[in-house]
Length: 157
Image (cartoon, rainbow, N blue to C red):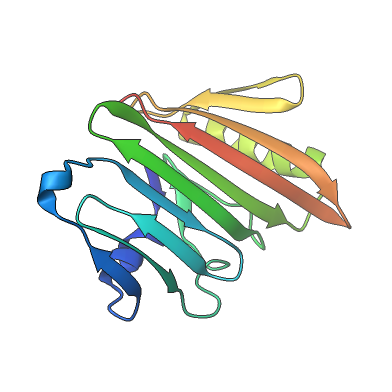
């Protein structure tokens, strides 16, 4: 199961610029987008707005796929969430890691193998399937002395 603990506090923060939407709009979609500075835009069935997360919340986000956590020293730099009643959910996460793309890819492959998560490298993409059937793909690119990476998760539910 994919987990991003940063999403829960977003819904609980009271100090935000929000507009309550009418239930007759029948907008069943959920969209959230955050950047590295903690600026979050959200569009929920019951509210739409923007907020600023406390400093450091994005970089300290608790993320895992079936128990496989980010490489130590990594920082989440952004995420997008798009889901709806009649469409599968999609989560895109961007991050930085303090190692080369090859080391980051090897870290994830080792961790997935240790947790029994189905994963393989296909060209320059690490692909897999979580225990609940969600598919994911990871891409890694050099950035300075480390890596900039993306994770795309497609929910089948």
